[in-house]
Length: 581
Image (tube, rainbow, N blue to C red):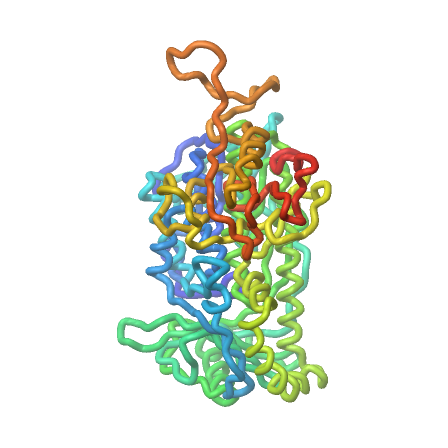
């Protein structure tokens, strides 16, 4: 979906619920879309005081973004919400490209990704449903969203704290927060208040997007159809209450220089032109539409993701084309990454400079994604003679061969990894730079490789019974994993070296050894707790051979590897803390 959002049914007028008075909190989240709600959910999960506000009256009723990638399901799993998301979502296990009305083949995502993640394939979950799940989760935890509060201004105190003024129908409210997360969309008032540039371009093409009912001419998977001058992107959305097939349909409404609709052209004119293109070029028909709109695609990234105590996330930080269903997922992971860093700083396990890692890690992800989708979108929409010949002549010959090879080659796993966002890489050295000796590998700086049937001895505390190594991540704390019996020594070394990251540890303001308060009535120096250690079977096929010990961050990324067998090991010297810069 277009990152800037697309119009839908009119929202009701904002109401204030629950009422806010003067507020002091650890984290203020401005915006209760998917990114802001995810930030609020992670604040709750990690025990941070947080307030989530939004100018709307409640969760959106518009479908908007709708594709959840595998990595996002893994993030939901850490919150205990993966089952709820899977029940509400429509699985899209296949991607089928075609020319005109003819499909050229199919990539079965669940077959390619079934050894990579517990959630292979794409899950179609409308933004409205996504928001209802997250907002309901927060309400159930006693942390309801404060609806009906709009951002007016922000300032900072001499101590670096944020002061935010909000407006509502009951009057202004001032919030004092240690940190502010601006998750308030592509037009972000928070970003404008900071004066942060939103760098990038806008496509000259005009596109349509509509949610269709009674769809015919498409299958149950994702389809992308090409012609010399048009394309159609189709996402299945299940069936409505009358049993009619629903689908999200996107394509080119008008090319540059082809004239434009009158500025006040409404959904009826847009829908009529889209219907003509879809049926005439691609044989896709439908009975009715829930809504239709036109939009332009923007490719933009904020010049900075952090300004003092204020952070940008989601569409406020980056927007791009709907190619690959990546936008909402990137925002959800922004939220997780940032809140995990905030939790370590607020708990005293890290100093303020650790927060620079958020921009160092997430802005390159946004830049890469924006550039990639920009190139793909340019190739799909180009009207040059060469591009038309490639789409009409070369693609029908070459693509079927490629589609047959993808499931059988390592490239298929890499393709799935990039699409599903499980191959995201962070540098683990100071300031988000490469650590000494670090190079891009399979494990270090990446999301922990998934090992099904991991062979852990006994139940995992806080686990969900799936029996994989990601079950340990349901307890989102710094932890050590060992793979195979030869890794025990490395586990002790990692656990001792990173004792200061253990849950409940706070670094004294004056420095010195991290500690936590002694039990009531206890005597002497309290012993700092150790990191939890989990032992699993060796998994060489996942880059975790016998003898591997890894330090895992609360967000599931590997911060350090100790292994004589792993070429990316940096055990010759300790890796700089992933928290300090």
